[in-house]
Image (cartoon, rainbow, N blue to C red; front, side):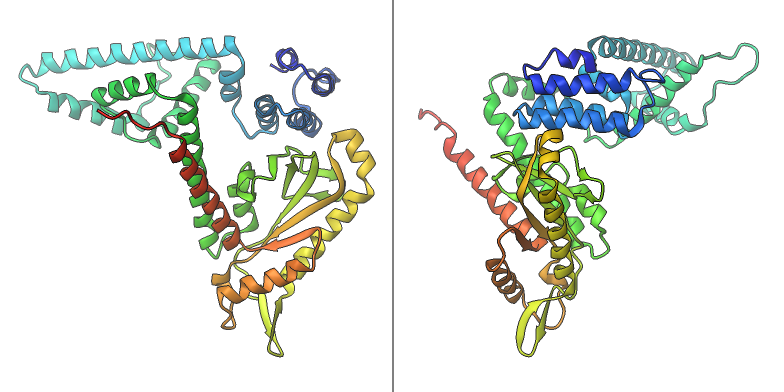
Length: 391
């Protein structure tokens, strides 16, 4: 799949990164088990593709890196990017469905033979009983039992994984509804449909983030999981989230974003449950210790990136000179001391007015601005729809 990918890009710099991947894979030990060097090399390809504006190609190699890092099943990757493997999987699926249908007919024949007056409800009860007892079924090891190879046993295990996924899917629609949807999609404006689906996905992501923020026990890791690959939440100035999070040995960035001019923007995430986000001293409001510590951490990141700018630009193609940063920390609902949400916002606005490269915002501000952006996108979408012809 990596070699095939090389022929799908016209950018010489991306092909050079792919050559580096192939050198890692072709080294001592064969093509597998290369660990972190292989993951890093694949992420470098994805990042270079992002810099070249080829986001679909970048996603391909991000998924390769996820598989190499043990975060994604090989079957999932092959189903998307290996035509022969997909055909084999589809053939196996068809054979499995055919076998299941054949067994279902045998069950119905047995039911009709043993209970001639059986109804559709009786048949349903039989199949429901089979489904409920499936965990207790086994192949057996005695004579006459079915013997399976290790490969086929693994296939059955994968079917078990598929079953878990299928249980989480929405309830299947009726045949009439499916036919109606097919007719609608056949005449649909595909661009408009894509916009609708993108807005729906973003609303879902925003709501998931809100749930995590509203939980005072949520960790920084939980917040990062909800914000990963959601660069749109931070505004339209960013074109993508970079695959690589580490550019120097002692610096691991939470969310590295790429600006339209090719420069780096760092997002540093902290917990939402911060009681001393804003404090009152001698009648004046000021930031507490937690946001000051987070800003100091971001300052150290920017200093390190400045000092290593030439090496990072040469090796990774990202300009880190005068990079900027956003610290996302706290929420007014968790602030103690009788300090109102408006006072929290005013204190942060005053603080940010005196800063040049680092901005401090709350999760409340992040959620509200993202929600407004979605509302504007929805409004523009409504305005762009063609008017229905009058009768």
